[in-house]
Image 1: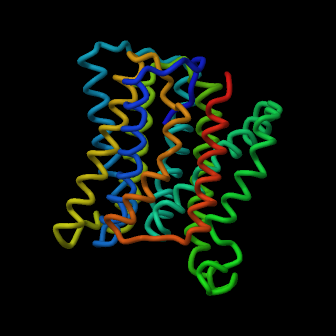
Image 2: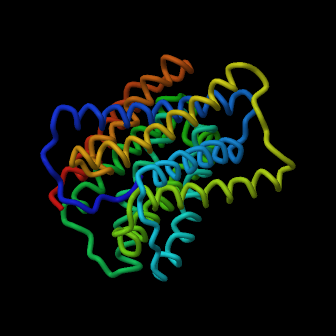
Image 3: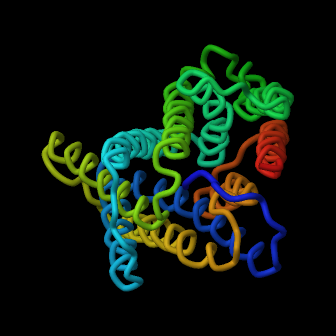
Length: 304
């Protein structure tokens, strides 16, 4: 996803439905990724397939739509940084999905608005908005409930519970941190660049970095059976389709690409992971997740 650079506009029914569709596909993409991971696919392989095919599709759109390719010196410096950050974010988020219930991984990742405010303060001296400061404790409280920080819902106790989920949560938070940094760098260094060009470039760089990771481990780790192949195919198709819609259909509808409505993604992931993977979390964790989604949704609807 890329940061919004336009003012929030009223949504038509078509735009609203399109945003929900993108959120559904993004949530389903992570459920499909877990299917692939359960069947022998590793994170680097999944990110390579997903990013390379998405980059190719968006690059084809650039050619067909005759989008001018004009990069300034500033863009040439910023794009490799953005590509590296998104590569780290992708690898970390899929690593979290491989270790945690999908919805919990996405909820921990959804702390990225807090990270965005932190990096904007550190790198550009921007003071956090009062609205964000009010939302911050709510998000953290909801996340604490969702992750069952005391291990009460799991019945394991805090130490044993965190022994099971700690690495996955660390990966999810690292994904949120790097994504927040990527948003800040993009907004300040490459916001005026065409979104399709920025996406094709970024995804291409992500694919190259992930491919380097594949090479260091001795090659691709591919699925061992049909469900894994379906998972790998669907995560690639869903991710690529969602991004293509985001940068071709949404601009014509007058909707910003990072609309708050798409933050409902963890809810879709929760339902799909329960239906497809048999993953379930305690009612208190569901309540915490809804608190996080509501707070992030509220933040995203603020006037820009």
